[in-house]
Image (cartoon, rainbow, N blue to C red; front, top):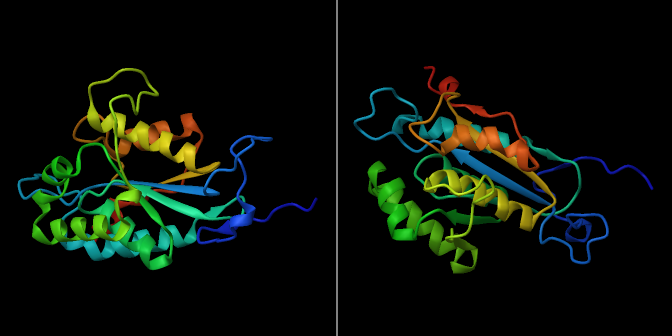
Length: 221
């Protein structure tokens, strides 16, 4: 058998999808799961800028370039997985739609609670885009984390830490090859969970970490 050549993220041959394990009876729905984690738009009272609103265009362009550049080891369909916070998450979903990559929305909280915590502080335009994303993807592509999800590292009360682990669980159920793309300033987060935690734990659970998009570099004028 000839060696399979790497394929771009937008590869779309469903016949090439492989099961998670050799000899598994049922194939996974996709060949690749592209996970995303990234910073939200800064709140107005944030002292050290991390993702100011004016950098949205630069971040979008960087996400588009990074997604388009990812190479997988096998051919087949790709699914994008991300939450729907202002900033990185919503930009990722929008970029994937532009590239023809289907996505699923994974929320650690019920939609109204997630909206209040992670979208509304950035302003009404992000709220509009959140609702537009949910409407475009439909309920079949929206998942809310359950009580027993995200416990790969054991019991924890931190919702965002669990959400990262749950996204890894979801990716494993969907595709044999998983890659994480991060929009990250390289610093520790404001609390448990978050982008730093996701980048650190992903390799422990079979997720390859793509070169992170350097948020601080995007802020250089």
